[in-house]
Image 1 (cartoon, one colour):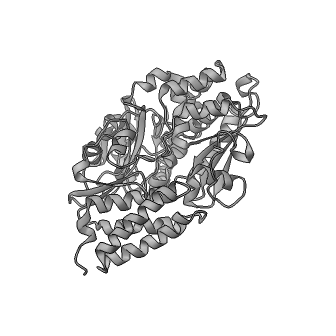
Image 2 (spheres, one colour):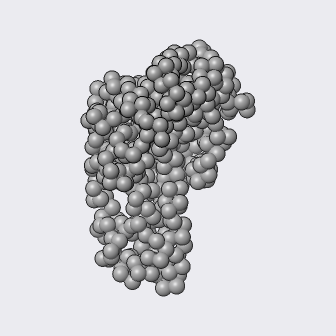
Image 3 (spheres, one colour):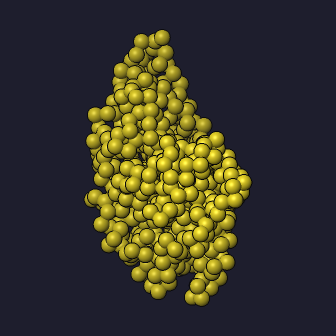
Length: 513
């Protein structure tokens, strides 16, 4: 009986040498005439253990890592195919504490299945949500999503079901589903991981959304920097069409829905939904004035559902296991689970999916293991490059939308970037302003000019020139950007700047070196 060996083809694993490990395994298997098959899966999200090699045994999957190509002969000599003892043996994969203590719903199949195999996907519960949706009315599908409490995971946290209901109620001959896969926040990678490790869940979620609102065409707006995700999506879409889960007459139901992948050109502002729609239509990515909302007049002037990858990838779980099942996870108005990404100066960087309510301190130390340098973690930035900086005194805050808002922070896409006590927060505030200046689409003055002036003002503060006057000027500038910008790029740039000034004032008054 052939033994199955899993080696990730996820971009993070590839960057750490997974391809050379897979090639070394293939050579040794052929050379030794072993009865084994290599499956290229997604990453489990434990990046400090990549490349992670797993072998299917009678006792379940056994993990080894991090594995180098030079380790392969020794692993096979030690009985890799039987889960044999070796210095790199980690034991049963699901029993690794980092994984065992998670609550994986959206990411339940990532790292487990062959990403683009319909048979593998179905064997692990895939397309059951779509089958259930085909037996429901559009109104029932929308109500299930409303009842689940699912909110957009792209940052705005708007109730997904309410957005869908708005599109459903519009009278139009053509409607669209647009997936925003332009994952541009620093320290975020959950969208990429899902597209590379379980792309069929996104396809299923988009198809269910199409059934719910009466849309027949979907678009995935993918950032051009994700070639591995692009390949996985193309393979998965072709496989889903062939198996009749996508395209015309889905599973013989007479319902139609198809998906096309479009590549963005690398503009951060296209993470904003209206800029993305402009780009999808072939124009320069600039923010649209609202109203009308995309749900009323979106892509090509038609009602459009715009959600991000994780939001749509979560929908199949809700339609499969029920709204009540999903709603039972989380706290307050933050229901379900969130794939949280640990990055920056952290010992164990990776993906953690937990129900809302876990604290920052738990994530940073129980999962992340503290800083990579061993020094105290001084601050974390939550929510991407425009998220607030949170000091150690607030690490016991719960990770949910309302709790973070109460301390002047935001959850965004769930990325957490850690900094140890060597960081200079005045320079980090400058970086936020510089980032906005570089990425601004230029349509509104507060963002376009304000960010450029912000860099200049912070440079004067760091240089010790009229510090008190320039600190007051910086505060006024932040207020103008916060209230006067057309979209979240300029409107959120003050978050990291103001939080750095509030929590780390000593860095803005440090002696000039």
